[in-house]
Length: 342
Image: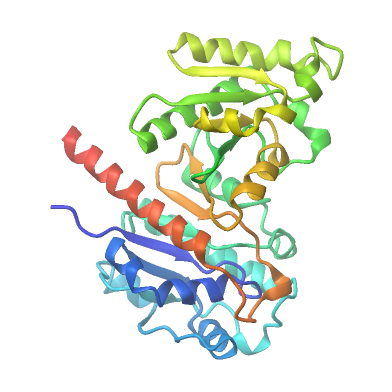
């Protein structure tokens, strides 16, 4: 018999909108019908934000150490309290190494809980990369943290919504560094991971489109250093040889037109903004970030910390709700696969 999935929801950077959207999630009784959200964060921060935003405070709070020892089978929504930062010293909307350190602590604990089976999936709230860097955290973002700490051999970032889904060959890298990070194997890995994920999510053989790196997909070598001919096209050919329905490389400026989007399940993009600009224009606050290739389920909001509106009662929790719902579905699907294979 399937149990209700337990989802570790990391609070994100305490100085951003993460605490507010977590409070909105905890107040959403509909979320409890799909899963058991366990907010990994700081109860005092949430209490302070609840007061500032006129939101209900958390109903149930459990100290992290107590949760580890006594209540790993928690079946009601709760805050797992880390007491990682003094709530009274936080300045909302300010980049601070202490908030970066606290956010990293929530993430590390959530990964450990998922790897040990104490939770069924992880959904991450927004972090601030400058705060992480100031805290000495040696990773540029969530995807890199999860990849390193789970020991995953190949991963990629995918953002999905009803309107559009994009996966990224490179993610948190400067544009000048992208060409040297591309390889036939890396592009093929992302195509394969995207195909596997969309097959599970769609329940059928998906259609993928791969974007070129350069304007007009290189125009047969006129632009760039023939990345399309030497790297992208060979990866597409190798994917087709494995039975994957994939097209490309297509010019990025026309790849996302409406007709193409309707016929495409996932766009494989060469760099961060190539995929995220069209996705956020079409589905901002509705899309969900998924890390493919991990041994655990991880989803996330598709937005940042929004420091300009932190603790003001203005944050929209739609993306977090969507991310938690998708994590619950993916966790349930993974459990069914294990049962079927046993």
